[in-house]
Length: 411
Image 1 (tube, helix red, strand yellow):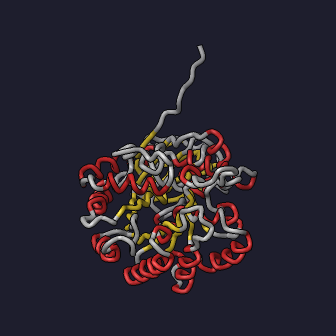
Image 2 (tube, helix red, strand yellow):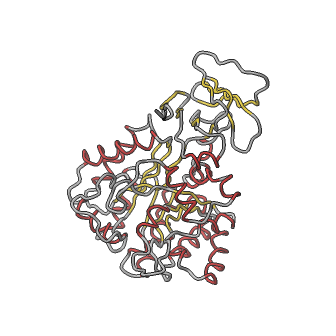
Image 3 (cartoon, helix red, strand yellow):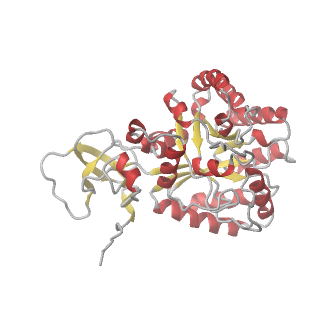
């Protein structure tokens, strides 16, 4: 297959992509007028990019909003309570059905790489066992990383450490944590040291829900970053949310950023969910409740955006469209300046792939998997402005999904 008239990010002119045996055989600058052969695709001057990446979602909890009750306060903590009640009733079949429905929605919006956090504070590990099956049964649509996520704590949940170890033995890819939810600061610190020890022993990646609170005294990020720095594990470690950073004073942040830069860790922000959950204890003014996305980027750190939730106890909306989250995040984080808009797709593509350590399994380069999208616009700016969905999603060199643009006729 050839894709002709393709516009590539950060390159001039149009290009021809040759896909063969499930891989990108070559990418060449076009000269003259190309011929469209049977089986080829014409990008018509639109952007061709690697697939969108979802670096942070909870597929085990998806599509459970209102079950058994709604989160009336809109807080993170009531969401955890609601999920605890729903978790008591889940089955593997229930979990698989909901997760697969959401994966289809993600794939329909051009996402082919997903990292899902799965609650392992369950003696039976029901959701984890279901998601391990989903990972194998969904390879035609996505590549799935599974995080062993201790929703109710490692130290504060009975047998939390043992459950984390068992989750990794069963096949989870990534080790999670939630230090700010442990009963005490000492427990939070010990949970970070435990999970980093486990990651070092097993070779797993790390993705920690870290300081997801407005409390400016929640400072487990410095603990995680120093553990990553001292063990030389930064490339394998992601700090998710870090919303407390939005409440830190600037003097502390100036010191913290030095450590973060040396650590080499990545960051995931889920802006639509954070602005919904945080600031709930404020009257006015109300804080935005997101981390310092633009400041981290300007300091040279790797930051990406995730959806976090789709119709669950923490967030009642969502449809799998990460461009919706990207646009909202740019607004929320004051990132609608010219330079921000020229590179905005990094936040849902390359930066996310780096956080997930996809390496040479991702990207438009000869020899890499022929996984890519043909978008409906010719630049980052126009993709965001128009919110145009992908026209084609190609996976392993074959068309996975195609979309007809909406037609409007005035009468």
